[in-house]
Length: 90
Image 1 (cartoon, helix red, strand yellow):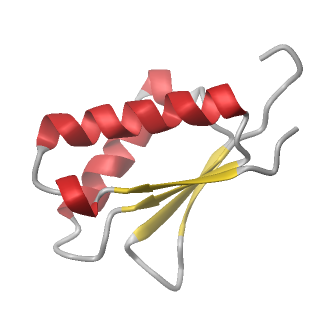
Image 2 (tube, rainbow, N blue to C red; image 1 turned 90 degrees about the vertical axis):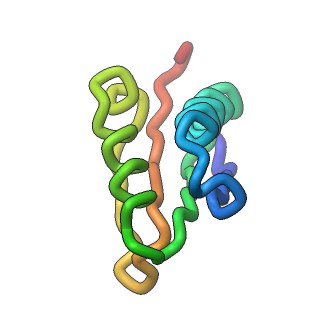
């Protein structure tokens, strides 16, 4: 089990729809490959549209089965934490 924490900052591509989805997919793939315990996604505060897009992505059935739980940072509305629990052989 790894205690590795990863971060994905979406600020540089906040207005590029297809790049956002690709970055999220790559971050999930990386987290799985590295057996990360946590992925911090920084979407910024702004209008909240990017955060909604990230939450929609995380709510997809194929993505939802890949993580244990998510947590919206209560002190910073521009951050979402995705937590993983890996089983042996996964």
